[in-house]
Length: 293
Image (cartoon, rainbow, N blue to C red; front, side, top):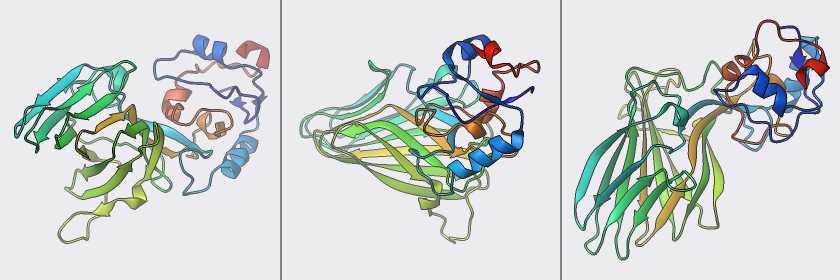
């Protein structure tokens, strides 16, 4: 790599998708300065991140996209009924799970008056957990990939966590998030869904509690076997959720490009993993700022 992007003068809404190429990236970055001295970029990145920073702070980047809810799915259960699991193969644009991974949904309508429904790919794209009038329900969304996956992308678990964006409910709800690793260690954390308008919620992995009977397991985020979301809303409540992703520290040895991204330059939740970002550049990447325009 001929140079590294400095930590100054990058537009605030830069978004590098996993399908971006070098030409597109050149067109979305303006006023880029390049710094051939990696030590300077490294020092700037270190100064911008401290373990425990939340999603609104510098130094966290997406290391794994769990679900962007782009694929169509609707599961409805009538009064007192349990429907599911209903499985839909996720599309590449909405997840970093391997091809063929399914989103498995079960709707358990615990009410006796009307329907409960899970919907995905509404406009704009999001998931909707809907309890009709006088109805309660427990809605489970499960991701069970073939084989284990590293959701940290080579980053550190210190300061890392799940990022739920655009989450909101009418009357109140809770979502219990469970992660099970390849050794069977199970950890969970419950999130109170806000009722004051769509918000972004960051859940540090350090907040997850050990659910193993012995209590002596350690969750290995580099070999995740299952991720389960269980939403339980109030009667007649609707909950929406835009996206679920993993954010982790950008300061990883060898992470040249993403180390220089801070919250001042990249919209929270939009930066992708450093491996995806670096892949946007070819070995002949120029250190001449004019070549980037």
